[in-house]
Length: 387
Ligand SMILES: Cc1cc2nc3c(=O)[nH]c(=O)nc-3n(C[C@H](O)[C@H](O)[C@H](O)COP(=O)(O)OP(=O)(O)OC[C@H]3O[C@@H](n4cnc5c(N)ncnc54)[C@H](O)[C@@H]3O)c2cc1C
Image (cartoon, rainbow, N blue to C red; front, top):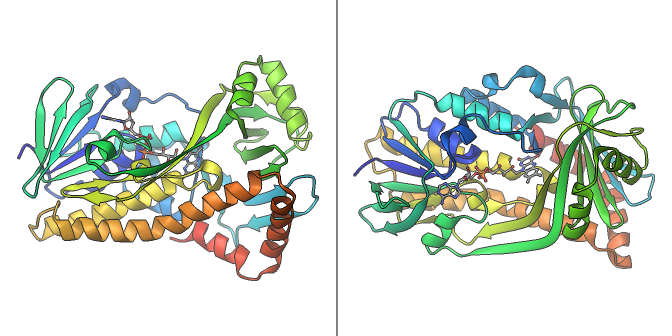
């Protein structure tokens, strides 16, 4: 064997797994397509990741949380869901002193995880390299890189995003839903304070979220059919600011564009298997969530943490980190935790983007019911704040 574990993809999920396997004595190779500079010092990509308490705890344990600049961590004090033109709002607030969660720019999470693995014993990073072939057997997993070199390991982990090439090379099929809509993210300045409240507004023919950052600053997240997003993304700053102000009904006053706008075509994916012989999928490669419920990375981090705990326990006992029972346990537990969130999010998206009368009536009733039923709001709060 050339190493014990090969992780393909140095995104946040792959780096979190690599870091979680520190001090196990295992030799780990991380293979990443992008050049070293792009992962050591990633560019701002517009994503403000809402992190749960559980995720913040994992990042703290990995030594990454303290590497995120303090002024880049914005507390999420409350969340509000609005529906169409209705004045009714479903509110969630934190119980006690602690916020519901935190917003952290994606590139800061990636940079912190990269810094955390820097100099880690037993870890090799191969950048600017792509895996082009995979072969697995009961004895080992073998990958071939673009330059023809080969690597063999006891465990191969695909952390290579939602349209995962590793998944395809392993022969694992997936549900892939291309939604024909895109999400544009852009930082804006506004005169009316946000009070740390994130708002998700399921309006007719558009979904708009405002995520609270520093004082007088939010991230505007607008979802529309892809052609409309392309048109908006091409506007000048002043025109875009005016468009966002109008689309948000001036709730935060006139908005001024304060950063680059980035558009993400929406694709959700669900892998039919999270594990195969000597291989596992983590992060978006396992489940690619719709961003509306802000759970993609939170789930990816949980999956990486679960796999790491199983591999660490095997390594402690001198056992095989790519053994079939271990991978089956990972698959069973992570699929069980992911499916309700994946299916529930897709249902929510369908209900809140359909414009038929029954759908409109159901979403109105859904929010009212959510406010009335005693377990709904505390239940969601518990999910966000669970440690
Ligand atoms: C607009 C938006 C908002 C979001 N908001 C939230 C949120 O609030 N909360 C939340 O929890 N999640 C959120 N997410 C989801 C979150 O960003 C993703 O779940 C997370 O970034 C996925 O990380 P990953 O490491 O699995 O994949 P990625 O970040 O995509 O990384 C995959 C890596 O693999 C590399 N790679 C790919 N193929 C190969 C190959 N063949 N060989 C070598 N390397 C390869 C790529 O270069 C890349 O570096 C949001 C997503 C979007 C788009």
